[in-house]
Image (tube, rainbow, N blue to C red; front, side, top):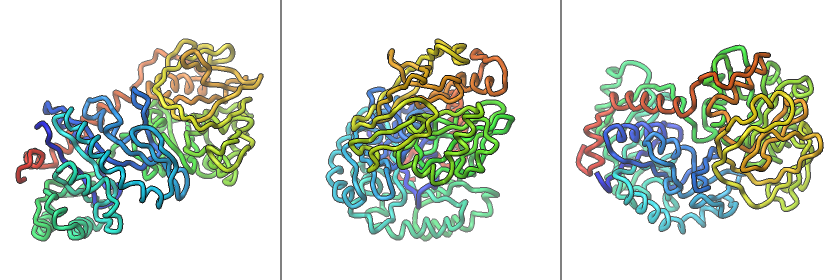
Length: 499
């Protein structure tokens, strides 16, 4: 199958393209094919740092894990990270090239086409098969001239396309038919099949509609995939998890939903912990019953701190901490816990200086240099309950710009490469770190939960890790998709044959 590929496109955002790509990649891996994901351009605040310190979108990382290959930035050469309503940080080949408005990027984007093609060709040479993912819809006719991620990418890769529609909100036949009709003749020729996703009910009820659709678009319906409660990491803030509680139990964890929240994949591991309920807080009342409050990462610390105060969320957070409640800050959330935040070069904001929440005695100074690398931290605390965890290893990654200057009342608790990363207050109930992924192995949070429950920390207690959970999910969705699709037809499409 060397050099063969398949592109999954959708009628809209959130129709399930990313999950379907993950399932297909796991199926190919199970069938002995060395496959890899590719998405020319991603827009997401959930990112990841590769082993060589480069930044890429989380969706392609998840897909690489499904394929059992090492994530690398060639799988996602362009990443856009929104920094406001009208601007995004543009990351090419894992490194920032600047902040651009929508119009600036529109003018910049055509120059990326040749480079993206070269990156794709390089990736294709190293794998037997590539599963490409589109973005949004290929039928945005006003954006066709500047397209680098949908049909223009399919043409560059000479990839056949399978079109996916989401039946859950209704209107799936109209959206599939309308999308195909808005494509050019050459683009329509690339569409070799369609899939209806997220169906609840008896498939036989759909049969008349499926046949009528095939008659109108002249390509086969390859299958109907049932609704799957998928708990893999989400690509961006379109996720549904902000609107619902996850898990059940006596321990309530409230993650503050910041305006530019990033890397909220940090908290999926918490839902695997027994007796833990995770919610996302948007209003002060949402924090009333919290046992543990978490301030997550953000793409814009200062602006989100201002917004947090405007929503009145600062008061319950500070009150919770002063009563001895646990508050944890990660990356940008860690910076918010400081006494003062300084931005003299306007890296984050037009605001040169702002008072932080004052829960950890430190100052943060922002700088243009961005730190992106995989890291291993070691708990080393000289006082308080954290001493019982000294020597525990926490693996993760860092993505941040900023340098902390601790005050005399700041207590180091986590070191990375021999330098202090994490600081806490003297009581040990307010702590922060730049390390994303510190909850993934379950052991550190298990110790936090034991402290909250007034139990002795037991870091040896076995618990499911995120790696184990992902493996189970990949195999589960692969089984469902394999049973729901005409996989023989899919394989023929990948080989360039008629389905």
